[in-house]
Length: 401
Image (tube, helix red, strand yellow):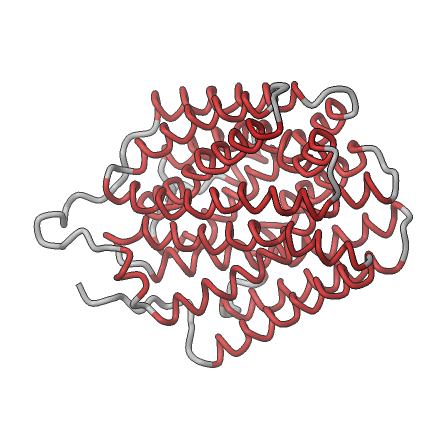
């Protein structure tokens, strides 16, 4: 009980903690699938990584469109409706991806899953921004990441074990987790979209977000950062399995290691770095990404990848809560869903291009792939550092209403 009291903040509403618990169970299901999707495609399509990377562009493109649409819809129709739509449609498409179908149907179902599942992200992030006092946003987003990664501790290990025998069950159980989360939100989460200013403030549009040049620069840097991070979950699993001969379960353990470190270190790191400007935190975190991928150049033994994941996760703990809080702070209240949609779009754009970029570079050799990935990370870190110098402080600069 004392452990739970340590994490419970009385300034945060009950609905936030319900969303937190639901997110945990949902991520157990989601993480059964996403670490192994490239291995699954390579096995089903009997194709090299360069071809799998091209297929993943369709999947990633659907995700990019999804988070943009999800942000607009969450402002227009409400956070709750979009989350419910995402969960019920995502459950159906995820189940269909796991069925034995033709390659063309597999790609169609995969694109459908790519569109429906990420609709949840901008709506849920906007809901947290609605629920939580501004001064507690970094802490709240840190807790959300902890809950997600606590689920990821379980999911990849179970998913790796199942994938060693049959991929069907990882998709089936992921669909079940979404249906469970659907019931939680339907029963216990009310609509959080602000309504008190509807009569006096226009609903805004995506053009309003595009007119914020500081935010657009941030989004471009975030896309590059996501491209780098995507290599860990989209390309490294295939590298370990197809080139080094490790079973899928080995990456499941690495993903669980990543999640355990997030759960253990997220709050201490957030507290230790709370006085540091958010763009500086993002620069330090991205540097850790680059160093982590360069560590993988030192050998093929298991300890090399274990150490690399430690370094990358340290960076992840710095960069993600800082970025989410910066966006929530900066967004005008009536545009928060759209800002979160753009933020998620930048993330998904990096993940969309990441497998294609990684697959192409890997075709040139492991050295060019990991070397270039580290260089991309250092470029992003330099961009965040310059971004900070130009005045992109944590304080929001609200757009005129």
